[in-house]
Every structure is written in C-alpha cells, then in structure tokens.
Amino acid sequence: MSAISLAGLQVLVTRPQSQATELIAALNNAAAEVIAFPVMAIEAVSEQDELSIVQAIKSTVMDLDQYQHVIFISTNAVNCAFYWIEKYWPQLPVDIAYYAIGAATASTLNSYGLESQAGAGSMNSEALLALPSLQQLSGEKVAIFRGVGGREHLAGVLGQRGAKVGYCEVYRRVAVKPPLGSLRQLLQRDKDLILTVSSGETLENLIQLAKVDAVENALKSLPLLVPGKRVAVLAQQQGFSQLLVAENASVKAFLDELGKYQQRKV
Figure 1 (spheres, helix red, strand yellow):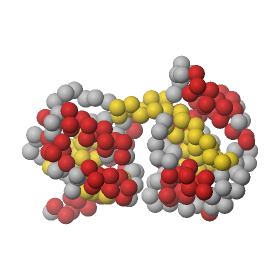
Figure 2 (cartoon, rainbow, N blue to C red):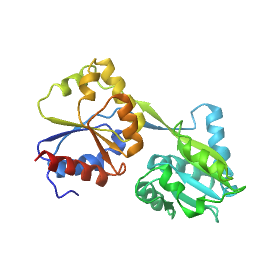
Figure 3 (cartoon, rainbow, N blue to C red):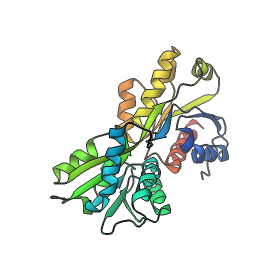
C-alpha cells in the first residue's frame, strides 16, 4: 500500500487480533518489523448473556422499521448487529437511512447488501455529524449500534438536533493481559520502536499494562501513532510527547503517517 519503505522500524500493533490482519500485512509489505501486541479483544453479546441486555437488543432490532436513521459505529457493530438483524428481518425494512463511521464500516455494511452514508476524512462522529441528512431531525428516531459504553458525543448532538436516540449495544471490549514481563522485554530492544493505538480505550489499556510492568515512563518516551486529534489530546494528557497523528484509524492513514516519520528520520 505504501511506496515508502519502513525498513528499520519496529511497530507495535495493539489492535484486537481480529482487526489487525490488514494493518500487519501492510506493515510487513513495507518492510517494517511488526510486533502483534493486542491489548483488548472484541466479544459479541450472545443470547446467553444477561437477560436484560439481550432483551434490549431484541427490542431495538424488532422495532427497526420504526427508526428513520440507523448508525453503525464500527465494523464490529455491523457484524455483531447482523447476527440479530438477520434473525428477525429476513428482508430489511424500507425507508431507513443507514450510516457508517468510516469507509471500512461502510464497506462491511455493503457486504450485507446495505448502502450507507459515511463522513468524509476523519473516521469519527464529528465527520458523520456534518452530513446534511443529520442536521434537522425533529421527532425522528435514530438507532446507534455500538459496543458497550463509548463516547456520548454523537447521541448528544443528535438529541440537540431534535432526534430521539437509542443505543443498541451488541459487543463489548475485553482487556487482554499479555504475559507479565513481555512489555518490559519489548522496551529493552535497541531498535526504533513505534507504538500504535486505534482508540482512546486501547491507549488506556496499554498504559495499564505498562504500570503492571513498571515501565510506564519508558513507554511514554516512545513515539506513539494515534488516529486523529481527539486521541492525540488524550495521549498528551497522559504524558506522551512524541505523537504521530494519522488522519484516521485506517490502514492507509497509519502507513502514510509512518512514511512521513521515516522520511523525517532520513
């Protein structure tokens, strides 16, 4: 994907294993040394979960035809949601506008036969909120498919614009604990190590692992690649000073920013 060689760079990829394949392959193709170090995993909500959680999902999905707008926060939201949607809607209801945070989420929706709108540029809520169709929403119902927890900004702004917003939380993020000492061992290497995170939650989990290994200061002295200004601000607040700020969390954006870093080093 990138014409710039990343030879000599050692890149720590913290994305969940299920989401890291494309980035790892692209980094390998650019001759970087990749260390897969997932600090969280994605776990779909199942029918064996707590009854109230399952009933909340079923309620939203069975009433899908009552919504004018349906938003999917991530590829995980799409895949986990469609387990439930396909159980109750063999044929999807009509006259619903579908939205995706980012091109990858839109592509995943397309694989299920849905056309969607996505914000341009940054793959975040702010880009989605700029779409003309989400400006005037008086009395209209919006469903947001997402993981458990997360930012409230999107729902808050839509509510201010008159929408009646409901969440449908179809997966959870679970912290992963690599073997004790592994992060310390990685930070003792001599090579140029670049940390990468794909979200603020990933960043927090990485910091917690560093605290366990008593290498927090060493971690924060390294270059950190983040997806966008919001996560950059969080990283600065945590004490990281060498920040590489990609436009968004896409593989292309990450490689472009790493290429710029490599060129600055030459």
